[in-house]
Length: 85
Image (cartoon, rainbow, N blue to C red; front, side):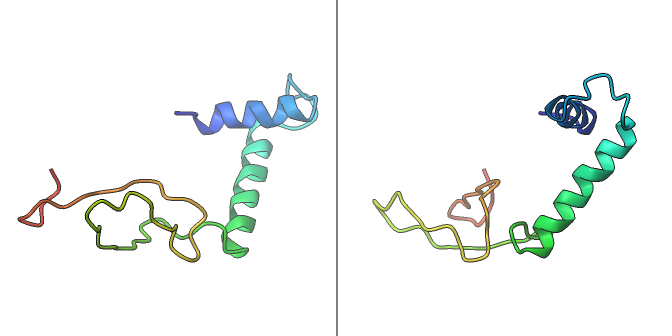
């Protein structure tokens, strides 16, 4: 998993400021957070904790990503008792 600091260094390298002499590491992290805010405002990312439930069908292994979702982060499958194994 990439940390925020590593992500900031990647952005700095991408704009040819590897030594972070033009902007501080904190400024790069601020830019990353502003980009995330823009994605949320554009509807690309849902607030943390967004949930969508579907019922699995036997022998059906492909499902559409729910409307409004940019990606699916995690799937949980309940067992017969409604518990996550």
